[in-house]
Length: 216
Image (cartoon, rainbow, N blue to C red; front, top):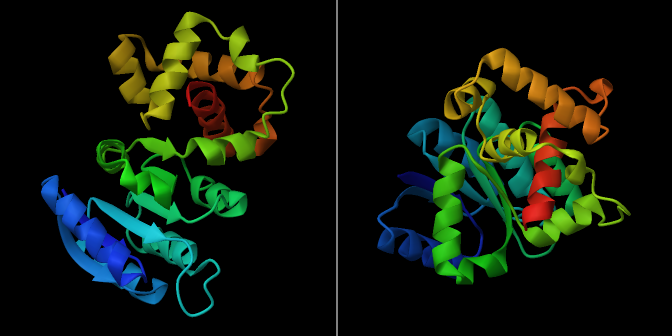
């Protein structure tokens, strides 16, 4: 696996390089600000880009904007965003473009080495990894009743595979059913989670977030 890292803290950047190296993951490029990320991704075509949200010069959302720009240049590039704090807007902006190959973790999770490396590999493989604290704020944990309780066992299986970043065809092959059956299950999931058609593709992202919120 090959990664690009965008992180302004030299200590954390080098620590990530060493941690990944110990896990057999090669860092092909590092940059200290957001402006260098899109070019590095375009040049190296990594399996994953690891990006800090706040970087010079304004320390607001340079990293996130750079990650989105990198995905525009090289569509489908898996992105793992690291943040010091839970910042709901940034998480929503990131996953709003699709739930495949995206991750949003608090920096403190890096210390949990085995789990962090597992998250890196899952995101690079097209999965979705969202920090439980982020999920808690995105969902608000305000529900009096959990709509996931209304899903059938098969619908839960479909939703779990969606959370892994699987496309409909891959879900059909995994469950040995037709593409049409998968589409019907997903339609039922959207209806039971009260995700309206007007929300477009964002419905798939919100369904995955609901699932991750239950399993976090």
